[in-house]
Image (cartoon, rainbow, N blue to C red; front, top):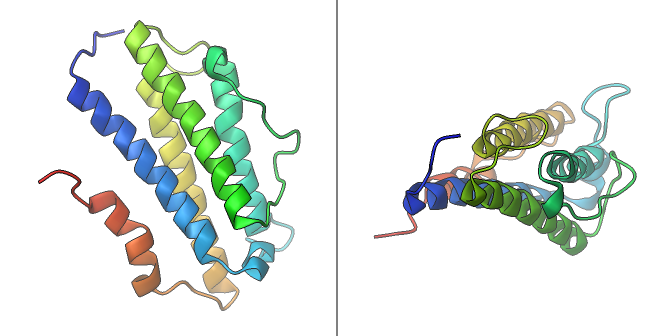
Length: 167
């Protein structure tokens, strides 16, 4: 594994993960409680179940690839959590576990145990996976006649990605 000593690069990669989590929490908080019951398709998962899946998947990959950073995970993968504050705390916890696993393995110069040649690939996989489900959630809302307007979605998503944090 290549030596990554440029702290600013690591900071930027970890910042992208933090922003991804912020977007996911923002999306969850923007939904009404009954929107969590919208299904992606006939027989498909509900939006609430998808959010539970995202939290669960994060923790499974940390457990499998950097077990020293593992935290307890829910037994049920597709569990809906309806309390926005509790769910935001759960997402923050699983995001922190992923962040610590990647940063810790990078600083130690260690590969991940099972799935990835490089720790950054775990972050890239999680961002890709969560972006896929983000689009699935927004499409499910649209098909259910409850689209999220761009003026609502933009500040919660794209502005989070594109905001400069340094002058």
